[in-house]
Amino acid sequence: MSYVKGLKCRECARTYPAEAIYVCEFCFASLEVDYDYEAMRSHVTRARIESGPKSLWRYRDLLPIDRDPSEGFHSGFTPLVRAERLAQALGVKELFIKDDSVCHPTLSFKDRVVSVALSKAKELGFDTVACASTGNLANSVAAHGARAGLKRYIFIPHDLEAAKVLGTLIYEPNLIMVNGNYDDVNRLCGEIAAKYRWAFVNVNLRPYYAEGSKTFGFEVAEQLGWKTPAHVVCCAASGSLITKIWKGFKEFEKLDLLEAPVQTKLHCAQPEGCSPISELILSGGDALRPVKPKTIAKSLAIGNPADGYYARDAVRESGGSAEVATDHEIREGIQLLARTEGIFTETAGGVTVACAKKLIETKIIPRNDSIVLAITGNGLKTQDAIESVIEPAIKIEPHLKSFEEQMLAGRK
Ligand SMILES: *Cc1c(COP(=O)(O)O)cnc(C)c1O
Ligand SMILES: [Zn+2]
Image: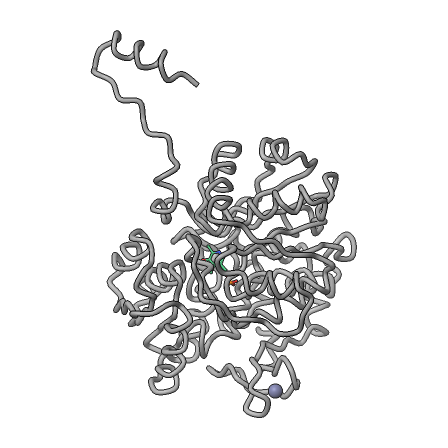
């Protein structure tokens, strides 16, 4: 049972069959999955969702597969953590962390999009999957693809963190390191996708892949008791996740699943060294200006974001805003979250925390409103970025005297 009608152009609304295509032949805009919401309305209820599996597949009625899912049975449904100590540190009343740093199996929200994309790839009969990645997608396609028994070609820029490279190679895919940045890698993958019959999860399967990100928003709403928060702060690379969180909230509203209409303001968080979407939002202008990324937040280093305009539109429609964080502020954001909540996030999460702090300080987010921070990845993968600011361990000899001498010197 599927509610998918097909694909539809995001600009001219021309319709296409649900195949491995992603660009409108007439206006070259991107395609999006089109659902039959009327048919969904009578079937998709809170009770039906609540009785589903504790994974992103509890929302399968709103996801673009025709047959039963084949991948990602344990992905998604991550904790929504009430963050009282961080709230106190930031001077706000009600703060939550949506913690995808513990998403199964590769510790980032990319396990959501890959679960959907690989289930779709199998439906469409592909035996080879591929992707262009800033790191986390590489880990996830490599891992899910291993379990799925698929051949994998994974393309990354040459300068990723060691843990993201190793965390891909362990699953034994073909890992291709390109001498260029992500935007170079992505352009190359467009050419390769046109020539080889491979399922590129974020190129020719992008319409399906992107829908997986809605589940991040679905979970936030369900875990808050079928409500959406007053604010969501979300980091952005291509701008897909933030766009789809909004789409997810609006779908729940359309299906009458929420206690109240969506009044959430979405805020876009980007690193200062790569902030084309935040700049577009803050400038109020009409043209996104691509940049050459220079930031420690490598997972967000996309200078020419595919969904930049759609992210801007979602933020604008919600009445939200944008911020940027310097490398120094990103490190501080990572440390603040760890120190207050015991959650170790990667640089992208540091961007979210740092930008949230600034949005609160500038009163764009009022202190009494409910806030959800999108923590999208795990700090064990980006240790390189914070090594220089971490306090070293206290070294002692194996004697009580040595312990007491050193402890008294360095006591916290
Ligand atoms: C990919 C990624 C993002 C951003 O995703 P987009 O959908 O491309 O905006 C955010 N955080 C982490 C950790 C990521 O890996
Ligand atoms: Zn079109």
